[in-house]
Image (cartoon, rainbow, N blue to C red; front, side):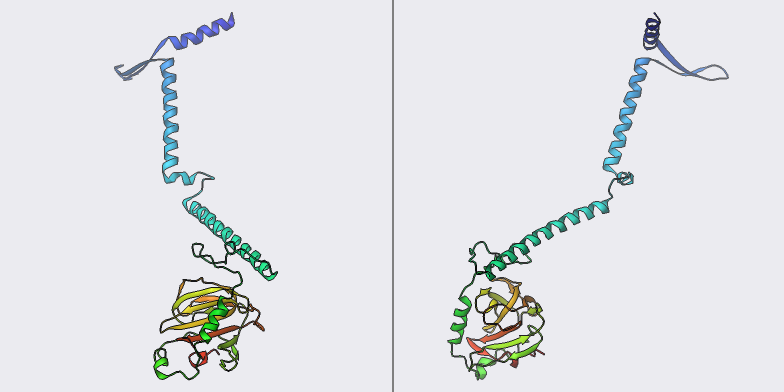
Length: 287
């Protein structure tokens, strides 16, 4: 019985109409009155709550006020997170290229034959041509072809006139241990410096060959103006590939001790003019 009485009271609350009256206390004149029942009142309260929640959500989502919420990252933090993701991705790609390079290098030292299309030289840019590291006699054939042009130490004035005004950059500073000697078929100079020291292009030009040879290790040939070709042998690592344009003084390799003909870490540097070998010390000071 008591429960029924309670339900009856609750039903009366929702069924009975109510009125809110605002009147002047002095003359009891009615200013405003509002009629409602409990159902309409609860509906209005729920609608107001939904509106407030929606407004707060919009303000937080589309205004800078969201940065003041504890735990929400600021714009600087978001930019830093994006930058860190990009850096980690780049480092991961670089680590994969380095691991692949060392794997091929170990295989090469062990005498294993690598497929030409699977060996990739580590480069700073991944959109360049892949450099083949398999042993080849292309360097030897090129050297014999140049030597077959009757290298002459006393080039005529007309031949030398085109390069006397060129400003040669020293590829690497160090001690010249073996000089240019055509009689012993030593067509360049050997410069000793620190292992893995930077080797630079002596003039502006284009890489016409960059690769590995059995006798002279990692080799780079650069074609310059005036029909000049500079050669860099026994490198530890090549930083450019065939077809690259280089500027004078730009790093192209690091000094090493690669190839069967090397006797220690050094750079063997040659300059060829119109197919004739010239002495690099006539144009460059290495010390």
